[in-house]
Image (cartoon, rainbow, N blue to C red; front, side, top):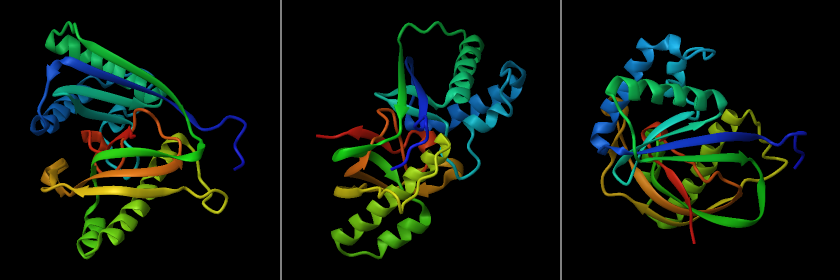
Length: 233
């Protein structure tokens, strides 16, 4: 594969706020309050045009700022320098508004460089949500092999919004992206996302030749913390 002089890369920052317990059902309301705080303090986001759009992804693109739940506590993750700056400003505003003096804050940083691996690496994505069209297609399949093939193709398709966020355009004819589903579990009930919509979830173990970030989510509703990706044995 022919790389640019500087391979596509991105800075990632995550705050895990152990002083802020939150339940999944409460997360949308917490996010709505955060959006309101951003709108009311837009001038505080100096040098950032339309900061709310970084937090509230209204278009079909990779969510640059993602809220989530880790061990019952709030986590917020940002991909890219403008997003990281916006996250730091939001956290300062949130602390000031609520009089918080956090004693248990975990900060994780990553500098991710896009690349391909010489051997396949295994990952798991938990509570990976699919869109309505894909769920209709999956519901018509009776055998595990067909389901795995559809989900493998869908995993590859979900890499591309992240590529766009990196400013990278991938040529499939030049380099194949491999995604093999090794194990799939359909979770018993759909999850509620924005505006009360329901999305079916899967836990998927897969292997790929694409180097993935250590802090990464994919699928529908990553802004709500769905689709966490982990290295797998």
